[in-house]
Image 1 (cartoon, rainbow, N blue to C red):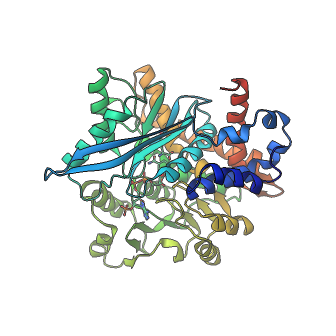
Image 2 (image 1 turned 135 degrees about the vertical axis):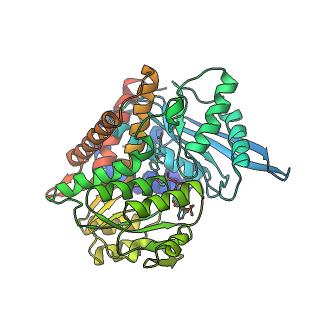
Length: 447
Ligand code: NDP
Ligand code: 2IT
C-alpha cells in the first residue's frame, strides 16, 4: 500500500489541494472510515482508487457579470465541480452564498458522490454555485444574475451529462430563471435541472424531500431503540427549505420542535412550532424574505437568542439544517449533557470533527448528512425519471419511494456500520457509498 495510514494520505491531499480546509475535512472523514476496506482489498490499491477518487473529473470556474437595478456592473465567481461520474450523470446542487469558494464546493461535491451512491439511483456527484448573495436583491436582479450564470453553465450540463438543482440560496425562483435561459439557448425542453415547478416538469414532494427524508432517517434510527418521535422535543437549526419541511414532518409524527434559526440568531418557542406557526415562518422566509427574529414579535412567548445557535436548548433529537460546521465539539458536549441522543443531519457536514467524535463516543444515534439528507437528491433522481417518461407521479407514489429509499440507506448503514451493539452510521455511510463507486471505477478501467 502506497500510504501507511490515513494521516499519511492526508499529507498528500493537503499538498495537492492547499488552502481547502473544508475539502480536507470531508476527505479525512471518508478516508478514515474506508481505510480498512482499502487495506483488505488489493484491487483498490492496484487501481490507486484513493488518489483517483479525490480528484474532481472536471473543475469549471467562470466569470458572471450582470447589472444591478441602479445600472451598476457587478462581477461574481461561478463554479461547477464535476467530481465523479462513474455511476451516472453528474448530479448535485447549486449554492448561491457569499461564503462559496472552491474548498466549500469541492467538499460538497465529494460528499455528493457517496450520498448519490447510497440513494441506489444512478447518479454521479457534482456541486456548483457562486459567491452571489441573493439577500437584499430584487427579483429582477436575481433573474439577471441567474440568466448570466446559465449563459456559461449551459455549455457544461445536459440531461444526460450533468443535472444541477438547488442548495442554499437556490430554490424554485432561481431554478425557474436558470431553466428559462437554458431552454432559450438550446431551443429544447429537457429535464436539465431538478427542483422545477410542477407546471413545467417538477416533481411532487421534491420541495419537501430533504426535510421529510432527514426525519424519516431519524425515525429509522430511533426505531433501532424501539422509539419514535412521539412526545419528543426536537431542536432544528436553519429556517430555509430543509428546516421548514423537517418541522412539518416532525409535527406529523408527534414531536415538538422548539427552535429554528438563521445566520443572525435562534428563536426558542417552548410551546412548540405547530403547523400554523410554521405557515407563518414559510411566508416570512419564502415570500417576504425576512429574518427569523420577526417570529418573536408575532409569538410573544418565544425568545430570541441573538447570534446564537440552537444547541444549548434541551432536546432529545437535534436536526441541524443550516450549514457546515454549525455544531462544534463544545456544542456536541452541551447537546449530549442535556439529554440529546439522536442527531440527523439535514445540512451537509454540519458537525465538525470534534463534534462527531463526541457523538460517537457517547454512542448517540448519529446520522451523517450524506445518509440522512440524501432524500433531496434521491427525489431529484425521481424527478429525472418522471421527466424521461414524460409523466407526473402522485404525491403518494413519490413519498412512498422516498420512504423506501431512506429505509434502504439506513439498512446500508447498518450493514457496513455495525460495531457490536452500536451502529456507527458514519462508517456505514462512508463504506456503503464508497464500495459501489470504487467497484464501478475498476469495471470501467483507467479513464
Ligand atoms: P436555504 O437557503 O433554503 O436555507 C438555508 C438556511 O440556513 C437559512 O435559514 C440560512 O440563514 C441558514 N444559513 C445558511 N448559511 C448559514 C451560515 N453560514 N450560518 C448560519 N446559518 C446559515 O437552504 P437549504 O435549506 O436548501 O439548505 C440547508 C442545508 O441543507 C445546506 O447545508 C444544504 O447543503 C443542505 N441540503 C439541502 C438540500 C436541498 O434539497 N435543498 C439537500 C441536501 C442537503 P440565512 O437566511 O441567514 O442565510
Ligand atoms: O446537497 C444536496 O444533496 C442537494 N443540495 C440536492 C442536490 C440535488 O441534485 O437535488
